[in-house]
Length: 208
Image: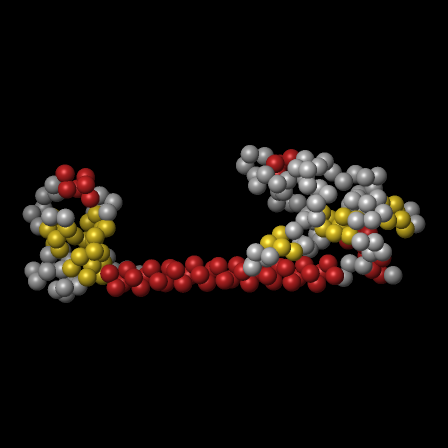
């Protein structure tokens, strides 16, 4: 925390022109021998820091100052916190990538497949990301070859869970494109399959 001290003008009167010209500004200056602070021609009082202490003066609804050393330390702490969050997010994103790679590698099908999704109109609305996604969007197994197994018949580019080519409306024109997301190092990878119906069908082949 920063120890702020409230300031006042030396004569108790605020020059309207000075206030209008400096409101919202910050100044770096030093306290003189009389404990006063000069700011753009105005003298402020009320600071108890020692003489020659370098301070930051903020002009707002009230006037206040703090030690510049305390301000610099606080800013460094904020920066370190932001950097730590960035690193934590990177580690988490890479953990999701590793989990997806391991999970998807266990899906065994007799044909080539990739990761796809179905567009939803709400994912193309003005207030959405505009890419056909919404929070409940799942990732499907999309077949890259025809698949016939007993009564199960799917064509190339069909979703494993969708019969008769019912692969959803391709509102964004990207349903046939493999889905890729970025990890913590901005490298693309195939996300984890999350469609329960696709997984229920896939497990038949995995069990074999």
